[in-house]
Length: 90
Image (cartoon, rainbow, N blue to C red; front, side, top):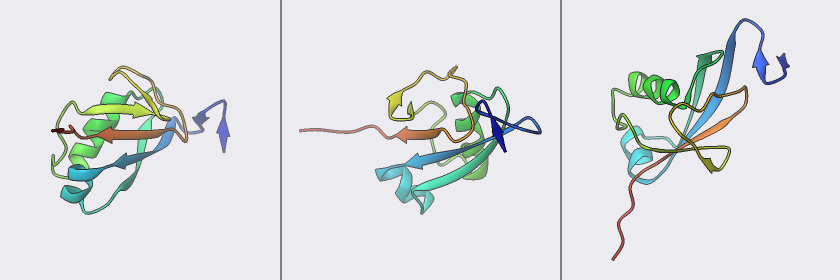
């Protein structure tokens, strides 16, 4: 049970959304990730990279709960982390 955004046992679960080329490379568009309390967006990206054979770059553009976030942003239980691939225009 969550309490103030933290999960008992010192863990948080976040949902990672991946789009476009990242989703194609991973064969899915959503990943559930369990992290230690106090984990950051950078920790989350590292966990995704470990789980997926490093098919996501080490420093993609990231958003938490639909707002762009820095790598040092601390995550809370239930956060939605989006890994946004580069876009090209013309």
